[in-house]
Amino acid sequence: MKKIISTTILILLVFSMSACTNNPKSNNAISEAKLTKREKAILSTTSDKSFVYDFNVKSNYKELSVWIEKYEFGKLVGDKIDHITSGIKEDGSIIFTTSKTPNNQNQSLFNISINSDGSTDIVNQLETTFKDGLEGVTSISGSNQTENNPIKNNIVLASICYKKEGNRMDSLTDDFYRDVNKHIDEIRDYDVVYLLRAEFIK
Image (cartoon, rainbow, N blue to C red; front, side, top):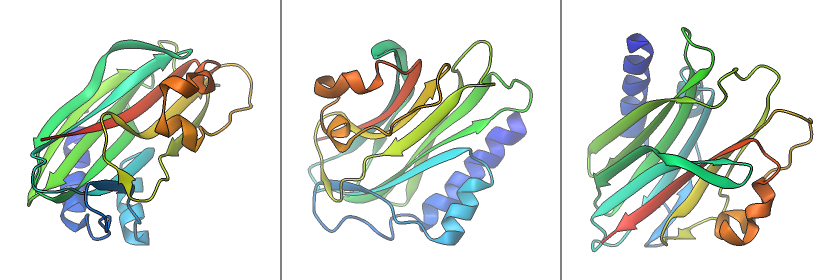
């Protein structure tokens, strides 16, 4: 287990050094990063799912908080997962990955890293989605596709949805990412949904 965490951290550190090459052109904006084949290959070696975002903010923004929320049938449950706050300067990147653990197939390792101004902060946490494991469970993941997404409170960047019964799963709409509360019905039929959120702080 320690080996997996160490390897994942090393990969994220190396990857973060080359990130931010496609930062949003607009100030106070965040976008899904356009990864090269090499970058995608690096992430795929240690993760089941990965999400990368580049941001560009004015100098009055000093910190960035990133965390994961867990929903069960559309209702928020538990505390924030992998909550991390890091100092930032103008531009940087966010990387979120998930990976399975060899010793306990019921758990996944969630990793978040924030890279800005030449430094990288990383947090990881073991998460149990279902106590009886993920066998037979259907999942679908998605990302906020808005280009140069304006920075606002609690931006939703990514989602991972799980469903135990039924094979039909629809990707969450762009409207959901823009306003979760108004479109919460989109996730009421899913057993578990994880949302990656970010907040820029002055």
